[in-house]
Structure formats: C-alpha cells, structure tokens
Length: 457
Ligand code: GDP
Image 1 (tube, helix red, strand yellow):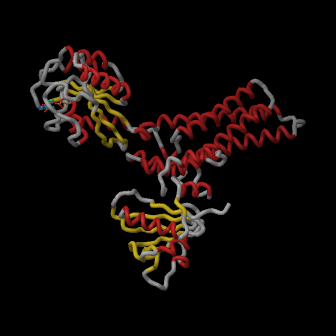
Image 2: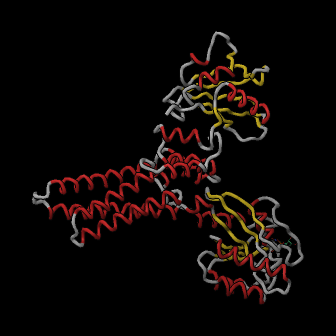
C-alpha cells in the first residue's frame, strides 16, 4: 500500500516559547519544501542530507506566517523510519495551526493519534513495548516512572521477552524434530530436557509477571492518608509536608469535611497526600459523609499517618482511632504540635504503634525526620527497571497467557501425554510472547495501543 505523508503539531496546543510541526512520509521533503523557504536561497530542503538543519521562512499562499528552523531526517534514520521534516517555530496556537494548514494544502494529510509512533512500530524502529513506553514517558510524573519508561523505551522488556521467546522457540524446534523422527529412541532424554526447559521458562515468566505488582507504586504513584480527630493538626501537617497551602487550616473542629489532596515527590515516586475529615462519631450528616470518605481513603491508602495532639490528653475519639489502626503494618504514628507542652500519654501510643514521631508544623521540628521515615518506607531497592518489567494490563495478559500455556505443557509432560499435546501448548506460549512484543499482535491490539497516544506523537 502506498504510504501517505502525514503532518501534525507535535507540541501542546497552548501558547509557548516554541512549537513543533512534524511531517513524515515519502513526500515529507516535498511538502515541507512548499511551506518552508531556506533563508539562504541557494539551499533547498529537498537537497539537504539527513540530520541537518536550516533556518528559513514559513509561508502559505497568502504570505509569510513565521520564521523558524527545519530539521531533515532521511529514511530510515528517523523516528518513524520514513523521511521526516520537523519545523521548530514560535509557539503561537494560531500561527502553528496556520502552518499546519499550509502543510495540508501542500499535500500532507492530518496524522491520527499516535500515528508517528505507529509508523515507527510498523517500520520496525520499535517493538510494541517500546512504543508503549513512549506514552509512559510522556505520562511520567516521578523520577522512577521516568527512569522505568526510559529503560522500557530502550528495550529492557523487549530484550527480556525476546530471550524468553528464543528459549521457547528452541523447545518448540526440539519437539518438532522429535515429532518428525519418532522412530529415533530419544524419548526419555527429550522428555526430561523438555521438562527442565519448560520449568525454567515458567519460572522466568512468573518472575516477569511479578514485576507488574512490584512496579505498581512507580506506575500508579503512592497514596498517603493523614487521619486523626478534628483539630489535631492534619491539614497543617499536609501543608508542611507538601510545602504549600493546599488544605484549609482553622481551629474550628471538623473544618476538613471532604478529602483534600496534595501532590509531592518522595523517593522518586509521585505521592498523593490525602487530608481526611478524621475518623469520629458525628451527628452532622455532612461530616458523617466526610468520615465515611476518610475511612475509604484509609482503606485505599498505601500508608497512613495517624495523628494525635501532643498538647492534649488522649480522649475517647483518639482511643477509637487507636483501636482501628493499632498493629497495622502501614501506619505511622505522629504526635503533632511538638512546640507545645506535652500532655499526651506517649507511652500509650508507643505500646500501640512501636514508633512515634513528634512533629511541629509551626516550627518544622521533626518534619525532616518524618520525611526520611516516609522515604525509607517507599524505597524500592530490590526493583530494577533496567531488567525489564510488565508495565500495563495488555502486557500482563499476554505474559499470563504464556505462563498458563507453559504450565499446561508441563502437566502434559508429567502425565506422559504425547509430544503433540506439549507442542501445541508451547507454540501458544510463544505466540503469547509474540503478541506481547508486537511481533504477531492483531490489528485491534495495535489500534488499541496507539489510541492511548496524542496527535503528533
Ligand atoms: P486538623 O483539623 O486536624 O486538620 O487541624 P488543623 O491543621 O486545621 O489545625 C488545627 C489548629 O491547630 C490550628 O489552629 C493550627 O494552627 C494548630 N496547629 C496545627 N499544627 C500545629 C503545630 O504543630 N503547633 C501549634 N502550636 N499549632 C498547630
């Protein structure tokens, strides 16, 4: 099929310093040459070698629209693997739209969402997991998410899956040989060899599948809920941790009726801090709803900061919270208002939570120590994204399917079933890995992957 030449604005549709328009396809240089005139009139885009740039003027039929730089990439050494021209212009929303319209007038077609990356995939520049990582890179909100996406984009999962697929392919070829020459007396050895080989593939697949859950904090971020009765200083603590005034702070009990959140980065992870209405008995209907939401926030939180007021004795409401949270692994006990005289029974809290951290949101005392404790809890030293990880549900489904097939192949081998039965399962496991990497993915899977992208990517 004759490939079209596509164009799109690659930068966000907001006023900014620079804007980029990307053109890709067999006619990219010709289309760009109709819109862009090199300042040095002796130079023509069509004659420029790949990886070179030129300053010039962008115009449509009515006249000049902007000035900027054109970068030329020649197939196959470009992002898409096709001829590509990128215009770096001023980042005006209107002017970029006009330049894009001029590109269409010159013969380009509007690019669909993710079409540049899809072409890169179809031209063999990326496998499907690397293409997905491009979207993850754009979405990344913390250092670890960024690092993980970069590793994946550079082929960490691709290589891991390829290595597994190669081993499965060897087992399949071995089986094919045995099936083709059944008269050879090698059954015993083959069965044992196949068992060991399949077991080892299954082990590696299981480890690969586990990376999906291990990497959840990187992918989804971490939620920390701050709970405690009204007025103990939850909102103040949230503000002092997040370093900004994002929760309402007053001394009227029950002010925080809804869950207020703030975002921050800790240990390279995107953290959402939730300031809750507190867990208490209340007659007030609206506040009761707040309490219900607090409980729900605690249930879904990865970590809970249980706050008690150091400057007041523990009361029935504190005891209620103690009984709800004591002994839970993911709870850190905080004694607030460290700058005030101590009236609270710290030993009672120590019995329930082992460790108690005293902080003052007014003077900042203890907040550094608390942040360090949180960083410690969120550390993920055992996790290495450079080894490749399962990054989304699509990849997970394929990896699970491959593991299920290996499991069934093992059962067939152990039950002494025919090699045909084993072969069918191992071939299917291999097919699932090819779906994962995109080597043999269906059109609908490919469409689905690229529909996540924005236009221009
Ligand atoms: P919340 O209802 O638990 O969210 O409590 P707030 O953060 O709204 O604080 C209740 C009151 O305690 C406010 O008057 C705060 O200024 C005060 N407060 C909060 N933290 C501290 C602290 O560390 N030291 C002192 N002295 N007062 C605090």
